[in-house]
Length: 400
Figure 1 (cartoon, rainbow, N blue to C red):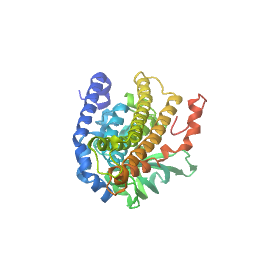
Figure 2 (spheres, helix red, strand yellow):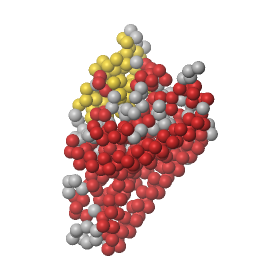
Figure 3 (cartoon, one colour):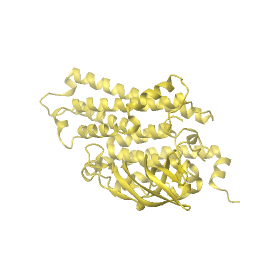
Figure 4 (tube, helix red, strand yellow):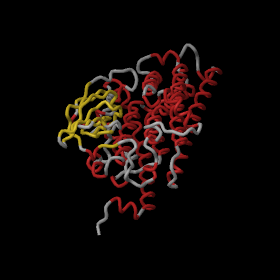
């Protein structure tokens, strides 16, 4: 008798989990195998303000866009620590490629939050990366049962390489406006992209404005942040921001790691500079040591909090609001540390790091642009601090 994918998962849970772990390990190896292509494309990414199509295809073929998708749709449901590892490796080579990878794969987590029917349409191709922009700047109108979306959204990263985009919107009905925003997935082909992302950092992410003008909306292709996911795996027992934030902050950690690695290379191999060799400068080497250690500590702190949540989820235990807040704070700390470490690396790069084309200058621009994301804003700190202290309450959508 033919079995549906979800039924097959339930019956063969242990076998499926082992298979997904094997898939994730294979994806890691495949990503390592294309990092030289990321490196070779770095200058073109900066110049053309987008990823080359050949690189998008190469990254897609590694399986990264399956990492956060339900197994029933061909996804891997990967542990978040593995997702962090993979995104960090890509970003260490090029920040824009890492950001697009994180957005493309991270957007696919919503396959578990919309209805299974809608997910089967939007995420029919599990290797397709997509895009999301959560700010509820759209308006969905119900005209006798026909829903349409209109609006304009900035910062729609990865829109140049996506088939679908999830956009934040409020639903307007005859009896008023639903105050709870939804993420509405529509085909990229139905939107207009405005070329507005002309910036210094993360130039290749294609984070342009997108515009919708009465685009048809199907309710089974929409989701709320608090919606209950339909898959049963460990990943789907985690609140959605304990997935989204670590995926994105891994990019900043990767950019900083790439900058530290570049300075370390210069120390080992030497350089032509009036200020002399790094290895002969005790203060510079001390600064490098401190920066490297701080970065490792911030990365370890994030992984520890995420790993703790994963362990609870594996046992079927709820993820407390206190732990959710700790993950958010660990991510914000990792962001701040990454910015400071990259700045130190750029300073240690000397005069050569002032030239266009310098890997250290590019890393500095990229990490500064990334830290402007709303997720990393310090205005979250006071509310998250209340939750860490054990005070009752929530901080939606970040802590639910």
